[in-house]
Image 1 (spheres, helix red, strand yellow):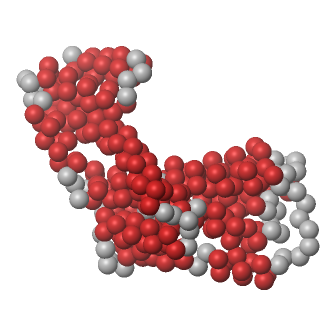
Image 2 (cartoon, rainbow, N blue to C red; image 1 turned 90 degrees about the vertical axis):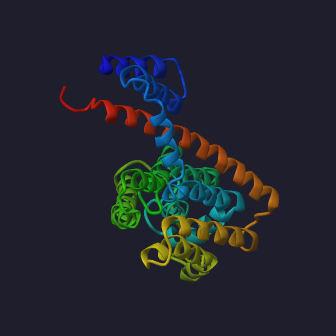
Length: 303
């Protein structure tokens, strides 16, 4: 009966267009009420424990950090700063998309913010320069996903907080695979450029190392922000939540001094982050309630 209620409830609610978090939570509440003798207070307790988890409070902070970087226009400066570095590499500025997404993901932790920030800058720029639209979109879509793995990843924070796994260890474990995937994306761009149809305009002249040096000099504040976010965790100075708070403060300072952040944009970033976390939090609540019911009833185990 429990299996029938679980599968039937999920099928009906999810196909009806209900919000995912609400659908999961309602099925969990139904299981607790009808199959666990009215044990619905357990859902309230589980939800409260999840929402008051200190580690999980890093999630809205990292979302806010990503929105601040997006609002301040820092992504455009980073993009322009790295552009000369790939001027002579096959695929040229397509590699810039991957590189900037990697750096931006190492600060924001959000794939949504990464894709939005770099896409808003990279797509119109590369289209105007004659790059193949499919490759532009593909490089931005692929690079945007790096925020899911490269620390500080929101997915790793949520997993570590809900499964009682060290988030610092997860961050260390996610660094190398994330960089390897970024390198694999760039290798694919090179192969596609060499052996496929034209995807980028012909490069002209030699590598301008002076322009490269000027571009890298332009992005010097970014390593400082990366240190506040990741360095403090790896050195044992701060917890993930504390490093997220440090990153928010540092991003506000950099956004107002290095970028074009002002108070109205900061308020808008706060509202956007609140809406995004509300959607994520709704899913987390529904998942916690459903998992509490499934665990109590022993549905995964032998009957």
